[in-house]
Amino acid sequence: MASLSTHVLDTALGRPAEGVAIVLTDAEGAELGGGSTDADGRIGRIGPEDLAPGDYTLTFATGDYHRATGQEGFYPSAAVTFTVSEGVPHYHVPLVLNPYAYSTYRGS
Image 1 (spheres, helix red, strand yellow):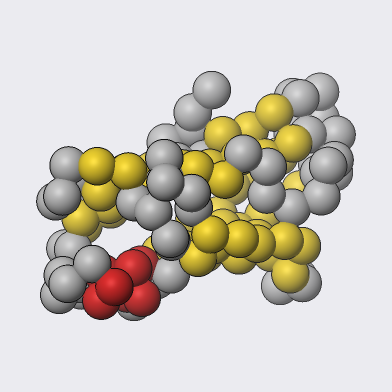
Image 2 (cartoon, helix red, strand yellow):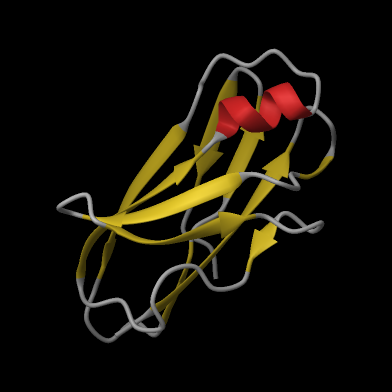
């Protein structure tokens, strides 16, 4: 079983992205958790304490965030689907964001 954290960095403004709403869903689309990023752009634990092996999706409300920060963005949301494997205790899935692009990676 694994835990999950995330953070969002806004490269256009050069700072952590505070206030990004994020929802975690499982492979069937059931909502498992959610929240908004803090002043450091982070959610330290999102979803249940223990994620079983399988596929999950984090959906970041990027359009709402861009509007709130006075930016005109292209993507209304960014969905990142990833696989939790047996025996891995923690996953960190960050999003690097600007109004016209985003990227992600498996963090530590």
